[in-house]
Image (cartoon, rainbow, N blue to C red; front, side, top):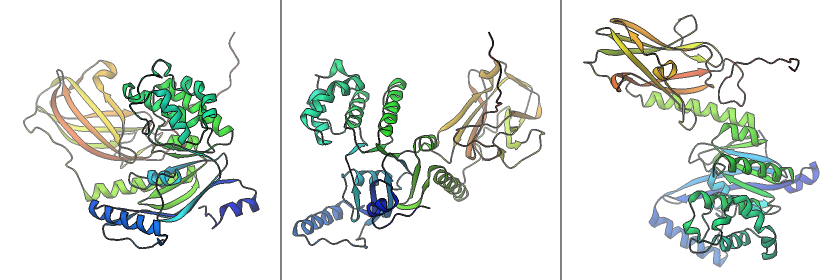
Length: 429
């Protein structure tokens, strides 16, 4: 784990590193009670004016530490990721670095200009035109009027809002405002760029343009601090990463090691939550003609297994019982990731797959969802399985089948496992 010295700029001269930003023992506290927050705020402002405010290691009634003793440094041209669960202090730290918040303890030392992509377009005046807002926004970011005039056409070309540039910003869509805010920030040629989950603005073409511009900036020596829940974004863009949890720095190291530590903690927390808050396995209709008895995991040889393994054969099997022979049975399967941002990773339907409905005989049967290769990355998942028939009459539902996928093959930065081969062939003429 990397450790920052008490004076990183002095250390940089000795080691040859060009440290452009140093976060030194940063702590920030907030108050959960609105009444007390006003009282404390007035006291702190008064103490600041009188010059008697002192750093304190104590918290007052209803206060909590949003950040506590955070230390790290960023070198010129380096990209560093800030990761952690919601509420870990990532955005608060980014706003302290950007000068929006003042820390209660510690300091931030910066060499150069900082631009923040935190809430794109949030500072625009809705009554003023896009043209007027560009000049105001970029002047706040530190550019002179002459510099803004020189870059103005380039900014508008990038945001692609020429048709509306002389219209009030209140007539812009949220996407147009975000594009214009992004264009203003990146064309200030900052030394440090703060990015807080804003790379999803616009359509795919505009996002590709954003990534190309960010790559150009980095090649020219701009440093990035990126807040993201996306493992791929951090691994692909960032050299190093800082892992925050409940306001404390857990790890500062290369992005691969930090992401592995973060995902391991997410998995452990998800397992603990499932043990403390178990959910009913299914909600079925006892009078139904087709009932799900249980759901089990199997390997490629039909043996029962506790886990699936990435890159290896596996099956999710529904053990069910039919009171009569049934035709046109459909199986729906939705798998959600529990160790990430709870996104849906698979949504499948047997009827959509091959346009052939399943036939289930009377008595006990097993319906298998066969995976020649399990493509899911290691982690914890929830599967929702449904037996139905058109026009969507539900026989039975198994809502909370939780299972774990263990690492069985190298996935590295991928979101799923892809069976593959590498070969060199002669070109065909």
